[in-house]
Amino acid sequence: MLLLKISLRPWRLATFGQIFSSLAVSFLLLLAGFLFWMQESLKPVLERLRSEQVITAYLAADAPETDQARILDSIKVSLGAHAADIRFVEPAEFVANLKEQYPDLGRELEDLGPEMSLVVPRYVSVSGVLPAATLAQVRSIPGIESAESSRDRHAHVLGAFSALRWVARLLALGLCLALLTGLIHLARTNAYLHRDALALMRLWGAHEATLRVPGIVSGLVVGVIGGTFACLGWLTAGAWLARHIRSLSPLLRDMPIPIAELAWMLLAAGGLIGIVAGVFGSIAGAAASSRSGQGR
Image (cartoon, rainbow, N blue to C red):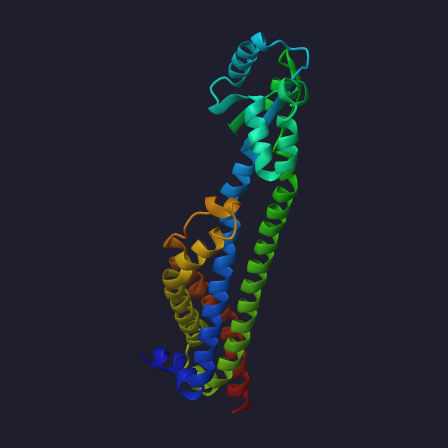
């Protein structure tokens, strides 16, 4: 009981400082938790961009229309067990899609009449979650003149998301280091508030390990209170914030809704950082009490 009273002494002598420190801990933990969730949630987005693609396979100009069914069957055989949507795009469908974005060009192609088939390319569209070797397999099929994949168009997006994940990791790590540094400074400040009591306990013959308990408990209390606020904040606003992030782009819809386990991780992280900071503060407190005892 005496050690607990000594541990809570900073809350009596510097109440506002402990409260503001706890709020700062909760804010930094909540921000670090958000960054951790974001970099982890981008994994399924990157996996989808790497795997899901649309392959456009253009038929050779001299390929007869009777070979269309054979080419479709060859593509299905090359894909094997991979599920994909394979269909031949008719010239009329191509022009109709083109008119949605370029009406004048679409009308000019329609005015060509029977000669439109000589201008409009014939191609097969293959879409789905496909392995990287699919494009090369499609290109090797007889009757296919060339093929292109939408994966190449997403290369810059993949690079941007990968860089964003690394930035989020570095920021989360920096926040944790800043939080630990701040709590160590607070623990060192609290050590001077424990100095007189610890010096008296030293004179009574208290063990060195006992003299470090108040500093550790004091740091633990600040860390747990900050972690509790961060936990409650994540449980309250985490899902709401995630929904707004997912609504920014269709690419982000694969980001999962935050799970409650992350909130408890923030609480545990607050307690752990508080203990680590308390250990450093207790070392300073023990040294201060030792100097005070020697002075007396």
